[in-house]
Length: 466
Image (cartoon, rainbow, N blue to C red; front, top):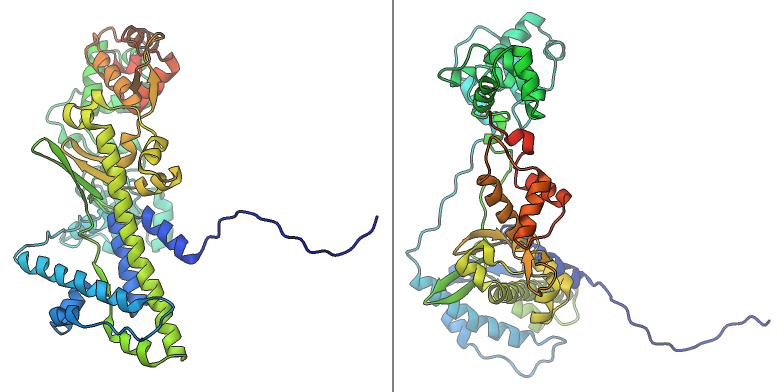
């Protein structure tokens, strides 16, 4: 066999992931708020980018800029002169819209206090004899639920105080609002909240020792242990539900966003659904025209190469943002057409839908739809939903029917059945499966248990009343 070198030609297909393509994919996946932050970062990095507000505030000459003639005797790799001309015309339209809407007021959003801020504020207004620094140390180590993961010995050692001082500081923290702060376990957390109950049975503090049995539905065991009737146990179980097992979760975490800005808004006007892509939080971008002179007179220089590079990046960013807006609109429009019955009549009319269905309808790849709908919200006449809510899984209805139902419809039917059951004799999961089968919703007992858990509904023993 002879070995040697040779040349041959072959044709292959491959996807080259350019930086511009990566940026377009990234922008498509961003929510409205994340895109706003991303654009702000790009404005800091690229001197050629500017917002429409900057454009109108610069010299107030947008009308004359739009009328400026484009030179035709210069040759560019990219026709930037046409781009500038198009931008001028768009700029004038933007200025007129803003001028007409000059009196509008933007909403003010106040961030909710964090748990740490809320507790420290209470500590600093109290006149106490214990060391505030130790109490502050305890507050700073509470987890998101408001529980203290450290032992008193750890606290005393880390703060260089006696065990008695650490106990006094913890006792102070446990008096702060909301009650339950600084608890070491669930039982202690609930005990700290007993003052919130107007009247509770004398056995209630002892009852809190049996929380594990309560969670497992072993009410008979609690009844025997406390030597009280089952009805009394049930009464105290109801009282426990009035207390908060995780009081710290009422407060925001540092940097947490506690509100949702929908990426698309759907309104029904005159029987027709109107779709609006909500990009009000995203600055409207343009390109700084001061750099036109560099492109005209600095040919072949490093300065011109830098400006052209930044100009390409700015134009691609603007194009990518517009493509995101157009893709979002197409996806939302396809969802509206598919789920019109749901929008008008409610959850029972939610149709089975997949990413592939939408992709085929708007002529894009399935992955594009996935990216466009990721972590985004849709405001509809029926409330605010994640985009993924509308992609409902389908299940066959019966054996001799071609119609389908969604898992959401099954969950709704399951909730209705459990709501109407006799609380003294609740249905088992197998019985629930049989009842759903009678409604042509044939699912297994294990699936019933799964959906029940997702709905936050307890098992048979936990639902039983005495």
